[in-house]
Image 1 (cartoon, rainbow, N blue to C red):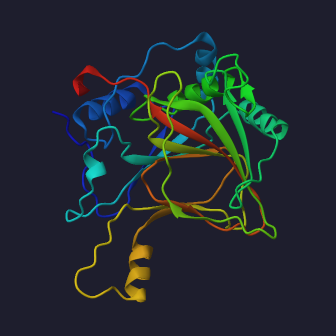
Image 2: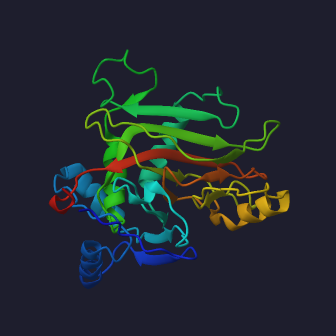
Image 3: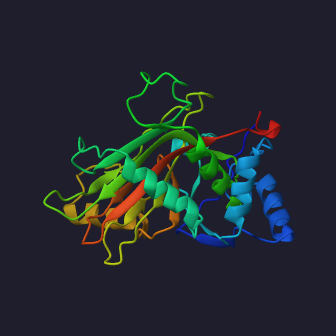
Length: 298
């Protein structure tokens, strides 16, 4: 039977590790991964890495990225059926110095070549996919399509971060998000993200990755993560003050947009995007799914 690796926690905790850790550290991490001591789902990473991705992986390792693990706080009295679903990611990651400057420039150059979509009032977006959607049939998707280089270097970067569960991979569908100060106040209210399906494998996405391409030095644009909680009222209705207090207690952490950082969190974690003060917030949103599952999970 599958076991839930997460330990109940009263407060949000974090662990900082260097992406170019020593072999001993990685061996200890691997052992914790097997025994479920680190709060991560146990999988076996794929060994099928292309030469191009291998080169990108080696380049990414020279950046000395750091990964901070953000745990979801939980009380013993709280029950959530999604906790027992082995398909879910159970923690969040905050990665600093995530990519090489070369790759960031390629991403930004790509962004500027894509038309701006203003159909959603909360946030202007730029969409791009890869050839995995429909092959050479341009009628399958109306968005610009690349030849696979985006997913290849992003997947190589995810590997280079040495996450305790390195089997995450990108879906080949991306969107640039651009929040700016203007007449339209671009704010994302508290919500959870929907899922998407990988066109080749049929795997359903389980997490969101935000890659920040700008820095908000003025305190605006933060992404706030909240705990999942089912608010149940017994007897009389809760007062407004009580509801506001619970909302404040539900905050796990607020992460300010910083250039060359990435934030990964499960789709089912509530989150919000705070208002822009002056500095624009530009990010690439990527959906993540699992790659392979080890035989111990079957």
